[in-house]
Image 1 (cartoon, one colour):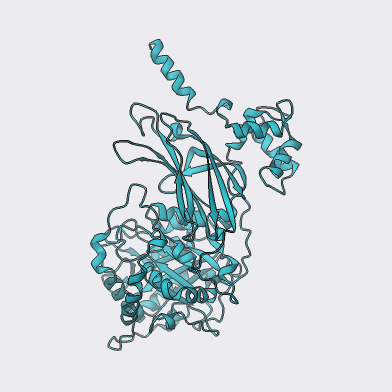
Image 2: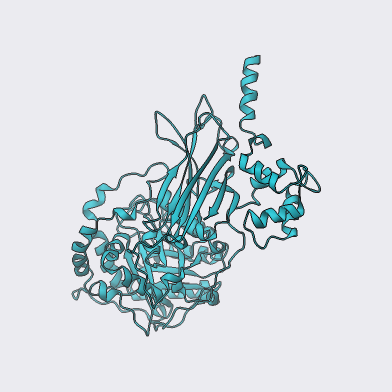
Length: 578
């Protein structure tokens, strides 16, 4: 090896190994403020945690735990190198590790629920395999609502799960149910809801009832055939399976509606970028078209008297704990609140967008007692997703997503359900539950707080990516995108400058985000590598619920496009609420 080559390699190594010399000036200043003679003692570290990191309940034991995690540096405390290592370590998470901490004793309608759509599909909506594997993966991630389309098998004597009217090869219902029982409570003890799209005859319904009863046994929650006056709480339903469906005739009608809607738009659905299209801006909705479409939608959902009414097997009907509403008449009828019973209503994403224009407050009122499920529009044949905020800001509990997909919208879903210990249930903000003053999603509110974000630096790409992944001849040129996903007034994305040829980029840039509804806001973070001649490369992402974001300097782990945590890639950032 020549001297010149060795010199280049040495310089190259020095630029990807994290060392105390790389520490941002803010880190050095705060260390100096809370240390003495180059050492931060247990008491000084505790004071740093309380005053700077805003961890009001931090104890000496907490400080000792941090010192122990980097104890090979100094016994009596932290030097600057150890302090820097702690700040960049896993122990310094941007979210508090407090497990389930919200009130779980309210009715189910008071929670956002982690919801899947066509949970059995491995890929696209038209030809991918049906399998129990994506169901297992969703349950492992904490998804609490699993959707199954159930149909007679080819011999009409058994039940399969498949996407009707497509080329998707089926999977046996029995296999799906057994996997659900095995994995339902791996990630969370809180209830799993099975939404069944039922296309069965009464004799096959009876078979399903027998299967469900035998497989789930005592964990199956069956309140009887009558609608309940109020939904039970997640706490009272821990480790229980709940069935939600509606009569077969209703599904025949809904299927026709789904096929009609957007039929002319099917060819417009283009492929997403490698990491997904930008999340649609809710402010860009075509309001003028919605009002004209509402009347047509009402006609499409009118009851068709020519269809024969199937009877329902009584033992099957007894299993239904959450009754899905039949959509008769128009929006006013759908959104009526019955004081004597509760139900679930399903709307496609664009139906909700249309309804929100003229019935926003009525939707919020409906979701205070009843459950609203929102599902992707039919042209999303590539299993892409939509902006979930359109559902959440109207109180929709079940914002159903294609979990086997990828992209920015799905990252928001992952972010929302990191909250409340990742249990799959997140308590809705009080303003969405206030029956005395119904929240109007269209009203722009005053700024409640401002989040100040400092992006200091990043590390780990050299270890988690091949050294020529970003550029065959030079180190990468990274930049960070940071912003808010929330109500339209709060949603924005900003980005740092591009730093050329650096495996350890140090941006040291500040951004401020005024928030009118911080309760629904998510912090979006993405890293990309600039490519002058082609599309920029993906370098990591995460999404964090601002309601649980910890103040102070934090290490923010980044994930792959599929939402899987990298081993080493993370950012050092600071969060302040001002």
